[in-house]
Length: 324
Image (cartoon, rainbow, N blue to C red; front, side, top):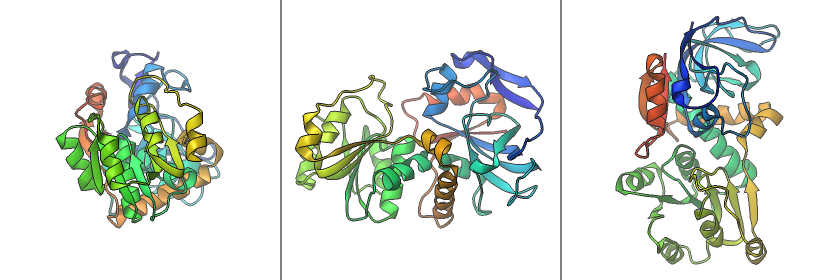
């Protein structure tokens, strides 16, 4: 089979298509004929060696995988050859075939295309886990989302809107702000405007109940200051690229507020059953058209390097999907 592999972590140019053996699934594993793999911010970090965990080499990126079952390993039940499933793992998806863990796999409804299902996986898993498991978000609460046009931010906007909540999105530029509004945000503000917090306060004088923050940087303190009493600020990531921000310790005291970490990778390691449950909910919501995948561009496996170039674009809105 063909796989997009790197024998060292670094630039995308260190990775190339290679011929390698697909292998046989071991106990608890499934071998897929890959139909689609979605790429996100984490994939770029892992490829460059900048993620908090380092993969074994050679490494094949792409962990949001959808495909048809070719073979089942020992002890795998509940799945059948030919069935379309989705699986989220550390990598392996940019290949014609992939071996995934049955414990992290769920059936994909027939109505969903493979690319659409792949585009839903990690971002919506992270958003759901952050909002409802870690954030305990309720429909009567006001949610502020940073990076609301990005993958995980737009997922949070859609999930909060789908449950009937009030959503404020932060984005930049007319196109991205319009997109966030179309996804269901009740109010969209340009975070580059120095008066955005004044505008937010005019609409929500008591502050917001939850902040969903995959951006970090200077926005972290500004958003925490926008919390109402007993609010929760969900730390999802640091996509701003401005380093790890600091927060004055008196602010949680003054707000009676909480700073809560959201780590989907830890959830996957500690509670795979919960991951499967959340992915099942997400796929059912998509089947009922309560949420929708947002795909910016699709690439064939032969153009995987170009897919990573597109992933780094500042104008990108939605997921990059590779379809062998």
